[in-house]
Length: 82
Image 1 (cartoon, rainbow, N blue to C red):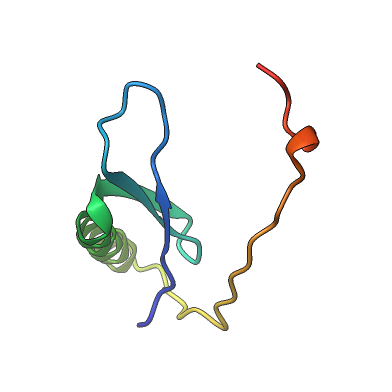
Image 2: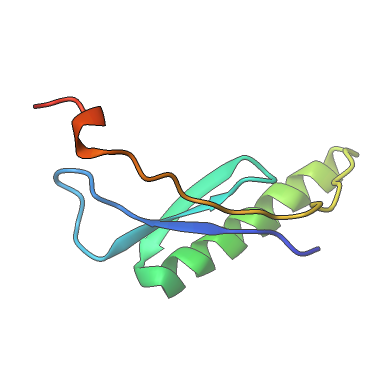
């Protein structure tokens, strides 16, 4: 099974530097890890556990279809001021 993963730098106050979120949209899962490789490893572990749980409960797991990704550029004035 091939799953798409989207990585996003964690920018939350008080969170250690260098961490990334790993989002697995097909499964609706998100985890995090140190650096891209740490986040990738955490995502792989989480996906394996999630799929094992689904299988143990007799639930089906459908493979992902097309994986598309894009970004949106918002103008600076679209963000609320702090």
